[in-house]
Amino acid sequence: GANLEIARQRAYALVAEVFFPGMQFRRDIGHRALPSGGQDRDRAEFR
Image (cartoon, rainbow, N blue to C red; front, side, top):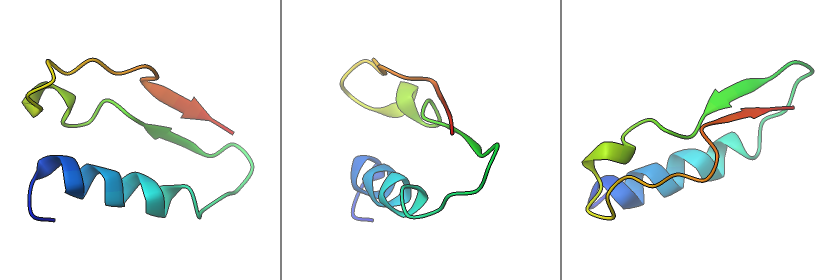
């Protein structure tokens, strides 16, 4: 992406299209590099 935030948004949009039982992924990757101070609501997702 043009910057880290856009790349992150695209990555999570693609992750949302994948599902399998027991699937896990992290939402905190790269959060500290963002200018927002890296506040993340969910650090891990389990489906």
